[in-house]
Length: 231
Image (cartoon, rainbow, N blue to C red; front, side, top):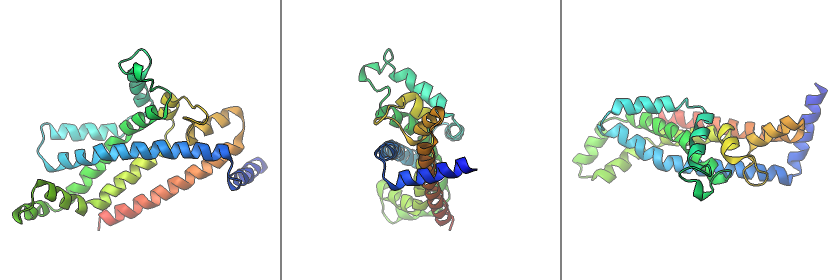
């Protein structure tokens, strides 16, 4: 118990001192997580809208596939992306492996299904008469889409929050595609794993506290927007 207490107190002191290494790791984590979340939203929100609104071919199969991808292990994505960006692969000439860009690509693939499914679910809860009324009043397809998206905004925001919460705490993709390079691709989760292996727990505990704080904030936001979307 004294070991845990000492580690916790030392971690708090490290955080209070704004340790440069700690700030650097947190910054990298936030950078790649925010970037991948933005890309996932750019792709997932329109995709979810189209799947929900239009009778696309194999619609049920597409929805089933998206729901299946929600449970896709991060190591599978890591292996898949690695196969495409390693030196002797199709995109090997771009030197993406062990870069922040590689992590962002992998994390984007991980959370696009989350954003898409949440958006689809949010739009499905909207009364179908909204679209018919907008079209009857002379709105074009773009204006009608905006009306629907505004009505589903809380559900869509919940999808963004859930996606960010998923990537900020993942480790498989970050380790396999980023390589845990200090000052460049070392994220909170990979740094915690490294510090544990080295038997140096103070930085790991400090990062754990920060990660738990972020996760708690994300879950509070997620519950708030999910509540709003169901009103």
